[in-house]
Image 1 (spheres, rainbow, N blue to C red):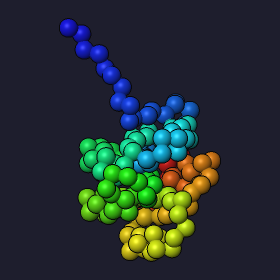
Image 2: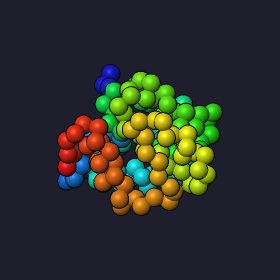
Image 3: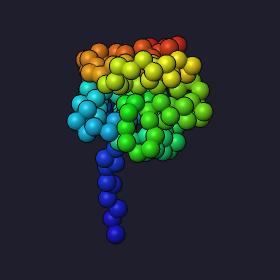
Length: 148
């Protein structure tokens, strides 16, 4: 019996005409927001792995050692916030760059990440056209090299 490769719905491949490279884990509970972010990142050249909540995102991170950056919402269902997920990821890899996005302006949320190295928080709505470059800058700071 022939084996058929079924593509992983959570993995998105870039085109050959890309400006950036690397693998990004996108964790977002809103399907529309996740799809737009994924499309922008794939169009810019990144490979994207997606998850819809913190526990699933943490599992994807553990399964995929080739992830270069995590981009996550902060407030999500599933029993784990983006901040809690980020703390667990940093326990596994303290140098992992993590970009958190929130629609909430509560200073308390941002205060909770001040002690976390390599974590940046941006407000929603964010500029999707600037997102690929912002991610590239964060990845360059981690590695000390350009990705374009």
